Length: 103
Image (spheres, rainbow, N blue to C red):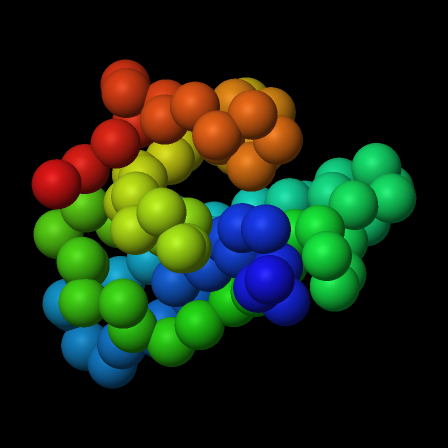
């Protein structure tokens, strides 16, 4: 059995200069929101779900991005509603949120 059922990673990379990066789009705040929400649901931790931040995930052109493992599904998101939809649909029920999915 895996440590987590699913693990959600938020890119929070900060780039110098004018290159696009996820941090320019509020990724840190939405990561914090997602982690708090999953924690408040009592579902954060071993045997349940992980929510982590990472540095560059290499999908800068879609920023901000997050990825769900082990499913290897990538999402672009804009706001808390998008994050809620990924948590409710994908983390909890294993259903891909097609409108947010990137290939």
